[in-house]
Image (cartoon, rainbow over all chains, first blue to last red):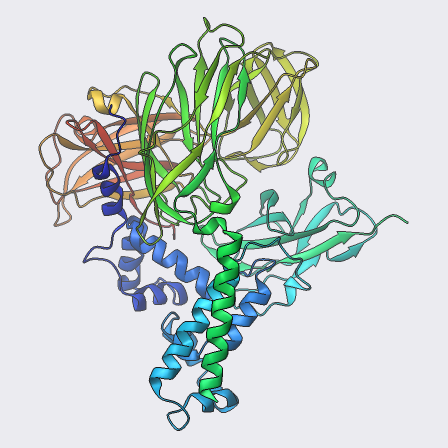
Length: 256
Length: 384
């Protein structure tokens, strides 16, 4: 076994990850994300994705984009970007059916008038958009400590199914013993994740019902004044994610 | 109006650019940063070398290759190897020769490299019983190790090495069952060396209703509530301060040895995702020295009754064979070994069905290069 850098070695894996002529176009991946897999074309497409690294990753990234879960500390940046990027830019990276939902948005978007040819050439608009993107990327990538989200649960996040979180929520007098939520239609199991405010995982577990006990060892890490986040995701019998509670927040009251 | 807007944005860009350059953000550094914690275990024990991602490097990785070689004076062999990711989608193949290992892996969901709580990879090394106390050895990866990001770009892996020191009194060698979902009441066997009545066991993600010392080499843990054991961190500590940390996984026991030396030396690294029906193929025409293989592992409590069927491109069944795999058993071999010596022709597909969910992995071996590449099997009834 040689110890020198072997480019051919990594090329093998790059080839395994690369797209092939059989790979699915973005429209097909979108339909897998939004439409039931009950027809032959859908099942064939799903079978291809299951065996294709490139399409699996594309679908995974698309799912992340379509059903985003903003991290604590990212929300200000997300809002900043969302308020400035033109709808045309986001349209290129979204599924057609999602864009269709906002077809009347033009009436509301007063600022779009600024970008019409009457006011500016398309070159200037493109230049401004590129600069905005660069600014946004630089802003997001600036090293900074994680910031506590003021209300993660209130974030506007589109999800396939929303799970109602019952508790623990908000400021608590006692350490919670359980995490509770409402059953989601079609869910056969749930995955629970308890996190620090910077989303470092403290504990994860699976449950079949709508409640799970927090182990004593994990409870001991819930200390006064320390905000924690949790999220429940629902899974279908086939194991696919069908819904989420979004990020929930609680904190044990400080002793006085 | 637009010129003002462009000017404003340009100014903001320049300010942010300069600010970013001053702070020298880690994200600008090329490569993926990995840290190896120091380890201290006694001669005759086991050390689980952990390759931890640096939190500043976290990013989705689609795959990669890696090599490592360990000092024979300190280690007498490799007992196990595993890849970790938050969703368990990562799969691979490791070719092990003595204390050297070469790994190729894929992460179809791109979750490898995104979770700072898990090691990227662990390698369990048997500490040489003849190692002298205080003897040290470097724990690192070969500089040729590279990851592939979600954009299919190769990234070098920069490793901050750890140091192994022969010493201490306690070590964990294996956890059985180390993976899979198990109900409350399940007895988890913690195997190792140097366990005492006063040895403490902690596992942040697990709760136990009983912790029983069976012998100096086994502690039994009874789960107080159901848990998925893959990737759970378990720490043992003796009163003298000696301690060991272990990330659990299902370390399959070979049920048979491949007659093909390359596959006999191959450790299939399974995704935690399981299937009752899957397909490998259609198989491609291979070059000289190349051959297809298959890896199967049963993480289920019940014995898996497995049927392999070779299907032509037209859908006709050409050949079939069956095998049983008990819990925790695995096999890895050339496809021809599963079909009584017949080498499947290009265009055919191998279908696998099992009575209980099992882990399935395709392999592409190259005997001239001594490499094995993992292949994802197409699955039925699971959606990635």
